[in-house]
Structure formats: C-alpha cells, structure tokens
Image (cartoon, rainbow, N blue to C red; front, top):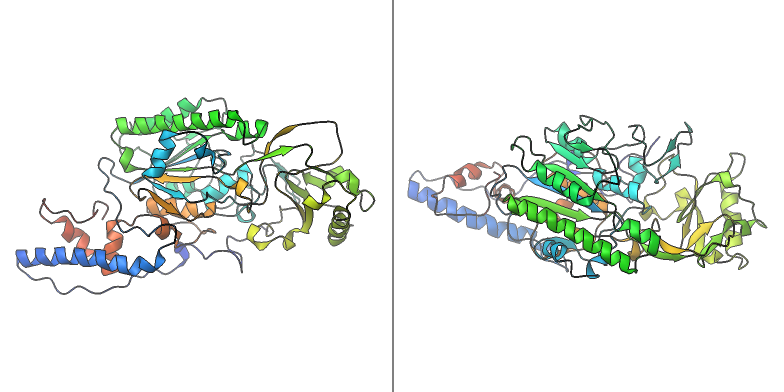
Length: 502
C-alpha cells in the first residue's frame, strides 16, 4: 500500500484542512448610532487592526526578510484572484545571474524570491518534482517515484507517457480547483492529462504534451485566456518549458548554450508580461516562476562500474531498475537484502573499485529520513546514493562523454532551482529563506481561496510568504468579519488597505 500523505516523525504537520480554525483578538466596542461617531470608530478600528497585526506577527520575522506589514494590492481589472504557475525545466539556481535577464529580474525586484533557491524533492528528477509541486506531496506519497519504474506487484511499467490514474496518487491543483468550482487550465504539466476527480483534461483548457510546440505559441495561448469572458477565464493556469534542461544534459551547466537558453526563457517571460500589460491585468495576476531541479556537470572519468563488485557480489542487469544518478536495485526474493547491501558497501569501500568511495548503498528504510523516500511499495528495496557529479554504469566502456545530470541528493546546492513570485499577494523586493517545493501547493490554494487536500506541506507556510488580504487583518481583530461591509461603506475619499476581496 502506498504511503499516507503524512508520516510519523519527520513529516510536516497536516494542512489547514485538518486543523481547527480560530482567531484571537479584542472585541470592538458597540458602534455609536451617529454617522460621524461611527466613521470615527471605523477609522480608529482600521488603525488598531493594522497595529495589532504588526505586533502579533513581529515574532515571525526571519533574519533574511521582515514579515510583510502591508496587505495585498487591490485587483484593478480582474474580479477574482488568478495564478499562473510556470516551470522552466532544469533552471538551476544561479542561472539567473548568467545574463542581465531584465524580465525575470523585474519579477524578482518587484516580487518575492527564495534566497538560495527552491529545494526540490528527492529524487531530483522531472516527473517526481513536477507532481510534488502540483500536489504538495513527496514522491513516496504521490507515487511517482522516478521518471521510469515498474510496479512490483502488477508488473506494469510507468513511463512519462503513462496517463492511467492508478499511477498518480494525491490531488493536483487543477483537480482541487475544478472540484471546488474554480476554472483551471494546463499547458503541459506532468499528470495534467490524467482524468481525476472532476478533471477530465477538457480540450479548451488542457493541452496534451507536444514538445515541438514553440514556446511563443504556448505563451500566446495562456494570454488568450485573458480575452475570454470573465466567467470563462481560468483562475489557475500552468505553463511548462523544457529549457534549459535540454541544453544542460547535453553540455552541462557552464556552457554558453545554457546562457542562450536562459536568455530565451527571459524573452518568454517578457512576452507574457507584455501581453498581460497590454490587457491591463499584469498587476492583478499572481505569476509563480519555478524550476523542478538543478543541474551538475558530469564526465565519464567520474564513473563507478558495478561489474568491479564481482569479487563481492555479481549484480545481474535485471536487478538494476535505475542507474544514474539514482541507483535502484530489486534483487530476487531468495536473497537477503541486507546481505546485498553489506557486500556492495564492502566492495565499494575496499579501495579496489574505481571511485567506489563516491557511492553508498542503503536499504531504503535506512536512507536519511529527510529524503522521505521509503514509505511506498513502488520504491525498490535497495537504493544507492552517488556523490555529486558521479555516475554509475554496469560495465566499463570506451565512451568519453561530458554533459550534465540531475537526480542527486537534494541536499546538493547544484540541485536547487528558482522560486520567483510576483503579483498582488506577493510583496515587492522581498527575499525569503529557501523552502521545499511541497509548500507551493498550499500557497496557491491560499491565493485562490481553496480548501487544500491533505498534503505534506505546512498549513502555516502560506502566512510566511503571502501578503495577507485585508479581511485577514479584520479576522485578527474580531471573529465575525462585519467590518468588511462597514469599511466598504466609507466615503469615497477614504482608503483603508485592500478590502476589495472582503
């Protein structure tokens, strides 16, 4: 049976869906009957609300960035909150300093970004991470434990073209949205073609993956949604680009081709911004730009050959389910798993296996708990962790290739990617501590006022990264949000925060 969304011990707390909702604060005095006194009370209350919020949240400030004191900016043209979630595959943290990238840096300067990048889940591969971003679940919970893997019970094999719902556990954002009456659209995202809940990948709002579609066409299609009537405009949209991952695998992270690819990505962000500005909605839209993982350079001189372990144990090819950089082994049932691990580690530490010291084998339950990579029957019982930049092969060959790879331990900074967010719910010029990508699900659910499905993110995390809506401040002052209506009755000349979403 697949792991539950929450594991005892090192998993984060359940989401807000499983926690009681309560607010604390003073109860305001009865309202005077005269109009002038009532107006005075309202303005005084608004000032008290703001002061109370600052005092209550002062202790949450981080050393990298103060907690937001302002409220979300009012939406000018759009009636409802909108989120565009954009993935630039393989955009390693630091790539945004390879060139000026004016459009990406515009989002950074006027938005919120992660100080030292976004932390991917392990393994740092494309499909596990994209689905973790969409569901807020670790791979052991959502079931996509690799880009390719067999089911040890059924014998069926998962590939990146597998769209059967049996593989895809958890609830991705587009399902959460449509099941709560919110329109969603996906322009490529792993798992988005899977029929699940109320989501059936509708032709108007769901594109089946086709890597040959030009990036410009993808951006223009997203912009086209903003030309629809307001009741047809999706509030949640995804947009996916294969670059710079494609170039990174071919030439590694330090080649000029990477700079060119990153510059092209900046052009696509600029195209999106220009289109939104032309429609007068750029400042109303929450844009979240992320990557799924980083990239590290590899060369064939950094290889571990499993055939050199023969004096200790002869590994059959069909035992090895994945090789580099995640070594996954499922031996026959008649072998003791601990014996296989012990013999492999003995050989690797013997000094007689080339680069053997850079590979260590584990029973999956003995992996570091921070990896969250044990509690699913699909995960093979024996996992090998290879050091950054090293690769594993069955046999020695005469190849002499250099390029790039990912999939390594997510503790390596080379595996980190970007988190850049801009919009009415994000404070301009704010830098927050790095965090795991499983937190993004709750952030988007909060922006769209959705009840989140159970997930591995923290229920409180959105409060650390999002500007509060004005009504959130009112809730701190009193439980019933009667002041929302009262504040909206103020004379036109008065402006007290953002109450447009009350």
